[in-house]
Image (cartoon, rainbow, N blue to C red):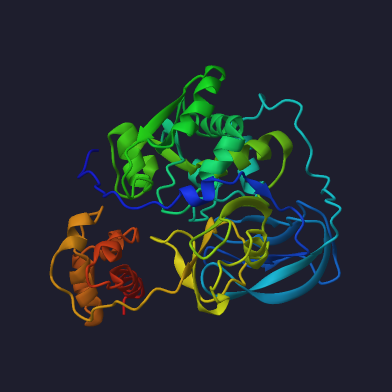
Length: 433
């Protein structure tokens, strides 16, 4: 089914500042904090204070939709259950583990002698037991996508990473290119798909240079360059570029499953080594950090430590007056302090000097927000409908289709945070208030 094609614009990227330093490992924070929440789902804790913990041991369970285990990212002792700042902008309960620095592994982490015999069902079960979730920011349980009854023709790896400042996927691919192709190969087997496509921004020529020579060993996998526009990494846009199709609900309607590149690389370790999802790469960057760079860290690592490892704050910047963004500047969330922890959905923390308040109280009626909207909405009309709490009008204006890309706020000459208003309108619609 072909519908209206998504559009986008070119925006400043600011990526070079965190590409100049190689990928760093920080595997031994003194404490890690495993949040007892995933997406909006509260987790059931399975350990107690004082328990001895091994890397890969199950410490919590996600129940209900997307049920799966959550694993410890370091070995040591459960030292407390305490509140921590989460990238959602909220304080949540977390399991504090004091790292013994011994990297003791759970017995379940064992290399597989042969991966060729795994059935589709077994490969999907491995995703579930590994607690594998999307590392592109949404945190959706990966195995749920592969349980679709619809026929899948192609698995697409989204390595577009179109958010400004973020380079975590780019740096990880360049460090471990074959792991990406292995993960995609296993995803294709889990989907019964004969075709796999790795998509990336056209200016990231080094991605092509490291992957192209390896394709000879991975039949059915190809590369696809995507135009340098925002939001080219939007799932629907990526599917359109690869297949010429679009869909109303899920990519499976177009015969597609889409996974983030980092998720695929973790899955390679899940299948070959039985290592669950316990770590990720995060970009620490922005004009407020002395040495922006990317770190490979266990989940629960305090971001404050990573800023310190990056040389701290730039000269003259008071941390109490800095502007922190959890995630990308277009879709991320502004937070007040650097005292938050790394989780599966946190791909970056951007530190900037606090911007001057340039907000103009009135909409100029220029229509720029509607011109750039990838899903063809009229954001200012949705904003007005929210302000009058007109739920029926919000519905008629299709606010639920908003993908929260942030473009409307980005182009607004009055500096109105229109994206926030549209998000609030969607919440109002869901509540039926």
